Image 1 (cartoon, rainbow, N blue to C red):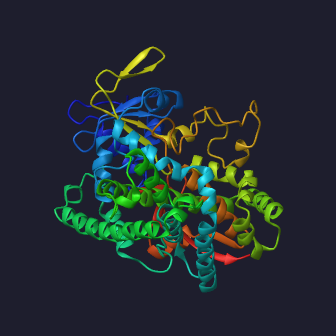
Image 2: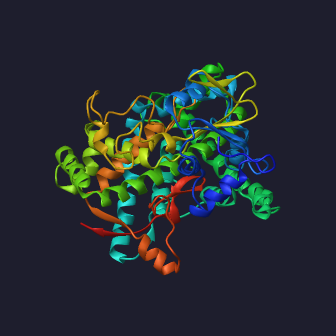
Image 3: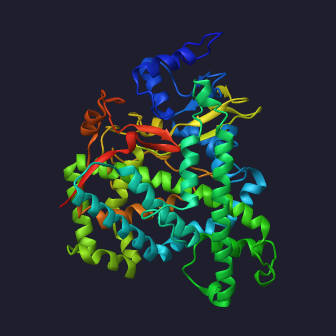
Length: 500
């Protein structure tokens, strides 16, 4: 591990790296930055951050990460539950454990299956078309704007439709739920915050209480309306092929509990309470990860015109060159989306370079990581599988810092072919991301409907000049990721857009 002080642990090490990297950098850059200072470090290593944060065992190698995410799935870090509680309540699929987690994961799994999501494509297309119209408006205005704000709104609309079959209308207006969740994210404490006023702000609990009431009131009404609609439709609702996630979850729950929907009115309390927590999680996590991924896709494509040209060619081959017909073609035949291997490759390569999340677990008394016969105890520690470290490891990825979508298309045996387990944006094992298929579906649809029509260009130089400040970078990258709920582009990715 890095040089350790009896009195200060590794706080001096972290303080030194914070002096040379942007002060708002996402913590998943720390492992990479520490390795630059101490190149002799081997994986994994300990980081003692007491009393400001949990002491951690940092892991950036896939076969080691697999020991505590796949072979023996460690419980989620308690700090994660505390961090998410204002957003999702105490019980959610990210932080529940044991039999309770297994039960509710099984209830929600059917709604996130790739085959079922395909039945929801027409609604997703509708929301993506709204996003296209918004880009057109900004192109006509010819002004600078923050792209992440726009991508967040379209992904909120999509997740709301997929989960609840509800028009969130985030792209046009704001409701109590959206206002509440945005406020909660702004007030979330950063785990490694040193300023005590920011870390233990006495106003924060009251803001969290108020926002939770707003979100729960809105969700309770939406769920009651959804349940009433199901009951009014009777058998037709049960036979409907295209159902939101909440309907499939309710079907599974009633079957598991041996309950008759006709005799359960209003919606059963346990299911309703748990569903409100899960819906908040789905909307928060789902829109956060996809919105930042979309930003980085536009960003990387604009920086790599040859790749962008190949992506356009694939879209032209599948949907033709008349852009006005793309939406109707997708709606009428969603299976066309399965003919876009290069779009999928671009999405995966974007997720490799800019992973939106990682997996943090808590160690156990009798569990150690085994690395070439050396035991690394985990008891009392956070154990962090740092996706970014794995994704940027040059021993795992040839030309690791380059944007090369072709690595996802080459045959096994090719030098570019990804090493098994090295790509971890959604993690592996039983606690992998339940919404990963939604991300892959959303990006294909939105790219198909926008990337050939608009040129989206990052405007960081203009933004920094306007703000009157020296540009901040990590390893030369201005669009580094910051922690704002999840990993998002710095400063919301200021952009300009124009028509092709």
